Structure formats: structure tokens, C-alpha cells
Amino acid sequence: MPLLLLLACTPNIIYGNKPDDSHIDSAETDTDTDSDTDADADTDSDTDSDADGDPEPWTGTYPSQRVGIFYLLWHAYAYDAVIRSPGYTVEDALRSDSLDFSDLVYDAGLYGEAQAFHWHQEPGLGYYSFYRPRPGEAHYAEPDAVAEYPGIRTVARSHATTLWDSGVDFVYVDLTNLSSFSPFADVLGLRPLEVLIEEWAAMRAEGLPTPQIAAWTQVIDVGGAEPLHRRILDAYDSAPPDLIYSHNGQKVLFVVSSVPMDPAGLAEIAGRGVLTVPLWGNLDAASLSAGSAGWMQPCTVGSDFTTLVTPSSPCNQGYTTTSPLGTVLSASRSYQVGYASLPLQASGRLGGLTFQKQMETAFSVQPDVLILNAWNEHIAQPQANPYDPALAEMRRSMGETGATDDSRDWLWVDMYGSDLNRDFEPTVEDAGAGLSLLQSCLRVYRQGNRSCADAGETCCQLAEGRTLVRSVRLRGNISSGDHVPTVDAPEVDSLVASGAWEEVCNPHYGPPGLCSGGSTPDGPFHLYPNPGADRVAIYRCYSGADHFMTTDSNCEGRTYERLLGYAATTRSSEMPRYLLRCNGAVHLHALDAPCPSGSSAEAVLGYVR
Image (cartoon, rainbow, N blue to C red; front, side, top):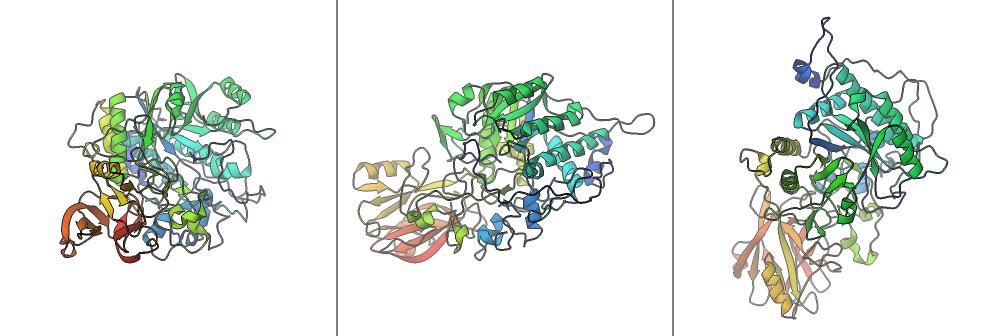
């Protein structure tokens, strides 16, 4: 999985112990074309048969505007651990008052076996893996045991049918943190890629449609090791020619553009007739102009990335017009500019708004290739915390600041729970909402519409988004100066311009229009703009001496000023931080942290982001 914070040649992911290459007897892999999946029943009516009643192999006809989606096959180690553990996810930990990150696999002694991978949500099809040994090969042995998931065929066929029927005509398989062949790289990525090719080739042989497949990998100088791209090209050669994503008659290999590429490796790939397409994410204008495609591009304000997505503002994510594939634009269900688990560093799904706004750009541009982000990542490794320990809770992942063991300082980059997560595959947590939105948006897109004007489509009914509450306080002692929580930008500007007030900054990243580098927990946060189930109204009131927040519409007998928005009544990745009301000489608030010195806790008003 791409780690956009880590652009060095060797990504800083946690691998733990590598599996050995010991061999034991194993049953030959089943490669026949029988299937007991529901996918067959859904698609049999579309197959053709020859005179003997056997189905004709399916060869796709593809539109001129291609649609691909990020696809992950790295689940082997995470699957191996989850079936030996209680089966908790990061989302479970966020929703629980008793679970910490360490309860997922660490405390069960499975952290190494999982290679530090943790499930952030549970697929609707259940936990799965695409690894199985090649015929005659052994399973990898302890301490990195890899159990073969028995339902590979069911999942592979379900994915193929769902994606194809949704309007996705190719997948690009993530191998980006792997550069040379090893047993670890084989289990994690290469062999699952081969298995996907085998399963979808079998479907096509039965006359059943599937998307095409491409791989995305590094092409760097690996010294005397065997470069992984060579094995990937061998897998390409083993596939039916039409199964591999092609452009103008050349098979396509996406290559990581954030690291120096090896000229000899690129020449080898070209010599085998394969087209390399540079791809990375969060790219600046110069990189996009130079022809690198962005698999994930944040919304922008001017030339700056922003995670503040609103219904009224265009997204304007960047895209390239000079890729080897032509114009390539990406649209994501969520995206991050740093650590997804820290405040304001990821957009989150926002009830679908992030994807809707990114698709608005796609409708307008009508790119040659639209790449979507993502289908089935689900897993991630925790990252070391680089922030000053003096920030205490403010350096920790939202919602888990009270953990008591070492896992309390874990941060997550690519996703965080279910909401700060890019996947569209139906999960236990989202119950298929993402897939429905994806299908709706692709129906509009495939019609060539330049805007989303079909009121009957979910894609065109913008989600509510979130309301940003900013915090302004009188200069001086944090616990003694009046605090004004506000959703009104002119009010912020007026107060700060007086010189007597200062805006409280987010401790880390500040999106355009907000400041960063704060060191206190009384900063900005998000609320829902509208009432709903499991939400509580948050009001701003005035006591005559200070402003305060309350859930009481009567302002506890004081002066009502305005409704700020709605907090969640329970914690989840959608609203993970507790909003704590504090009382010192004045009222103030603290986010996911104890009240500042000189004040004491009064009540948790709800959960916010």
C-alpha cells in the first residue's frame, strides 16, 4: 500500500520476521473451472455456447474512456492473524471503551505473524486472502504461518462480477512497497497476483466477464537481487492476452514515480513490449505536467491541498493530460495528506461527499482514464510516531488517546477505521453504501455527462458534509481568557484583527485557511450540520462573562447565541474525538485530552472530528 509520507527508496513499513522458504508436501492447487458461487448464477445468462454446449471464452470489448480501480492483494498475513485472534478491527477499537490497538493482534502474540497488518474494517464477504501455494509448493511455516483461505474462488468471482457490472473495466494491483523478489514479496503480493490472474482467466474461459488486470510496482536498482517486475511480467505472459490491461496494443505496467527509476529495468520492460505508466499520489502541478498520473489527488484551494471538503466548494483535484495513457484523473472515497488518524489530515468519506465532489471534476474533465480509489485495501500497518512527546494526547490517534500501553502512540497513514478509509467494497460497517454510490456515479459518468444533474441518482444528491468549528480565545492564560467557538469566518477575522484575540491552531497540519503548530487541546473540530440519529445539538451561549458550549437549548438559563451543529452521541471513526467541556475562570473545551491546567472537566458533550 502506498505510504505517501514515506517517499524514500525503501518505504518505512514494518515487516517483522520474513517467512522462510521451507517446503512440505501440499495438495495441488485446484485450477478447474467449476464454481459454487452466486456470481455464476448472476452471469450465466450472458454467456455464449458453441455447438457442443460448451461456453465460448469471453473476450472483452472496452470503452474508449477506461475506468480502473485500486486493488489490493496483501491480505495473507493479516488473514493468518485474524483467524487466530478475536477478530477485532481498528473500527471495533474506536467504538469500544475497553479495546486498544494492542487487543487486535499484539496481545495475542500475533503481531509478527500478521507482519503488523491490522484490519481496519471487516469485508462483507468476511476476512479473506488471495494467497495459495503454487502446485507442488509448500505453505510457509511458523513463525510466519500463512493459512490458505478456502474461499478464494468465491471472493475473486464476486469481485469480478461486481466491479464489471458497476462499470469498472480494469483493476491496478498494488505492489508498490515491493521491489525485489523474496519469499515475503511472493506471499504478500506476487503469488496473489498470479492467483487473481488464474481465477479471472478461468471465469473468462467459461464465458464470464471480468475487468482487466494491471500491476503497479517499483522499478529501482535492487543490486544483485532479482527485480520483482521481472516476475510480474512473467505473470503477464501466463495470462490470456486480453486479460492484461493494454493501451494501443501494449500491456500496461504502472510504475512508482516517487523514487528514482532504474534505466536498465525500464529498458527490460520496454524490451518485453510493455508500456510503463508513472503513477503516484498527492502530486504537485509540475509532476502532473511531466506526465505522472495521480492515483490519489486531494481537493485544492489555489495550489494548496485541502482536507476541508464542502458541498459548496469545487474540489479541483489535479490531474495529468500528458500521461502515456493520455489524460488521467483520480477520484477517491477519502484521501489523506498525512496521517489519516490525526485531526484534519484526511478528508474522510463525509457521507459520500468527498467522492461526489471528486467525481464532479471527472464529469467536467471527461478523462481518457479515470482511476478510482479504492476497492479492497482494508488493512494497514501502524507507523512510528514522529511528534514531540510533550504533545501527549495531541500526538496520538483520534479516539485512542487514553490507551495505556505502547500502542497508544501508533499512527495510521493510509486509513483509519471505516470512515477515514478509501475502500468501496461492501463491509460489515458500511453495509454496501459505498458500492451503491460508486455505481451511481459511474452510471452518470458513463453517459458522458459534464455535470451531475440527474436528481434520481444518489451521486447527484450531495451529502451534508461537516461544519467546521473554529476556536478563538483571548490572549493570556488559556484557562482564564474567554473562548469563542464559532462557525463564522468573519467573526474569526474580526476578533483576531483586534489584536486581543488569537485563533487556536491545530497541533499538526492546518488546511488552507487554518493555522497549525498549536500546543493546546482547545482547537478546531468538526460537527454534523444537521440533526439525525445518535446526534446531539451543540449550542453556543453567553454567561455575561464568557462564552460556553452546551447541549441545553435553554443555555442553562443564560443567553442563547446560536446552534453550532451536532455531535455524535457514540464514538466511531466518523466522529472519534470527545468534546470535553472544562471550567476554570471561564468555560473552554478540550478535544481528546484532559482539561488544561487551571480548569476541571464538567462533561463530555459528544464526539466530534
